[in-house]
Every structure is written in structure tokens, then in C-alpha cells.
Image 1 (tube, rainbow, N blue to C red):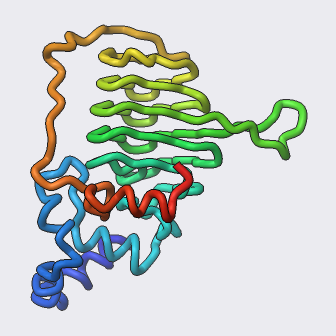
Image 2 (cartoon, rainbow, N blue to C red; image 1 turned 30 degrees about the vertical axis):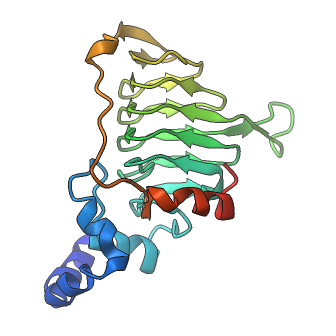
Length: 215
């Protein structure tokens, strides 16, 4: 499906897209070109206009194969786009906070609520906090109530059931445990020239957050 969309967008509309993308509204296309979570016109169109994947309410770009539940309960930091990669499930029944420049690979699951063991109609909500400059490997799962400090790397396929609030570590396994501590002086807190929370310039994000979000 996406290949067909790409054909119809790139070929007949190539010149109009170049012109449209230069409008001030689309600054995020040009100014996120060096982002880890780069936003293209094609991605914006599929997500926000065509609404393929039914994730239109998310204020950050989301791949059409990913699922975002309750985006108003999710804080996505600068250059952080949960669900941008394929097959993710980000469930914000509780609240989720993800810090700046945190990267989330394909098929990652983050859940902030789980069923009550005695009555599955009831959800028990617990806030998830993931720090800045983290890296969640492909297929990893972050369970309700987990706190991950800055510079936490989660190995692919890991199931994180407890918190690692100090960060600066590599965790892996099921359940995840520390397999390596990082040297803090080697962890680089970089910044992009232009800063965006999803599609929103960061200097305007607090206004958007107070008006539209629950986090």
C-alpha cells in the first residue's frame, strides 16, 4: 500500500510537493532533516491527512503500522517519536513521559495500564517515565510503572518490569537486568539546531501541552 502511495506522491506531485513544503507551515520538514526522527512530507501526508493507521490525533509522526492509544496522555520529548518505526504499540491509558532525543525501534511496546487479575474489565494505571537520550531496542517491552533514567539502553526483545532510575546503563533480558554500566562522562547530551516536539516547535509546545494534553 505504502509503495503505491509513494508512487502517486513522488511522481505526478513532485513539483507541487517541493513548492508546498516551502510554506512556513511545513518548516518541520526542512528543519528536521538532520533529526534521528526526520519528518518527511510523505510521512506527514500519510499520517495526518490520509490517516492511514488511525493515529491522526498524535502530535508526532507515527508509522501507519503502529498503534497509539490515548495520545493526550503521552508526553513525547524533542526528536522523540514513539511509533515512528513499524509495528509499535504505545498505550497511554495511564500516562507516559518520554524525554528528549530518545529513540524507539520497531515493534516496541510501552504500556501504562494492565488488567486487574480478578476482574479484567478493570485497568490498573501506572505512569511510565523514560528519560532523555534513551534507546529502546527492537521488540522490547516497557511495562506499567517503570522508570528509566537518562541514557538507558534497552536490549532488543527485553521485557522491562522494574525501574532503573539512575540510567546510564544497558539493560537486557526477561525480566531485564543491568548487563553494563555506561561511563557517564562519555554520554553526550547533544541538541539539534531546530527543536521540535513532533510537528510542534518546542518554543510553542508548552502552550499546546497545557491546552491539549493531560501530561
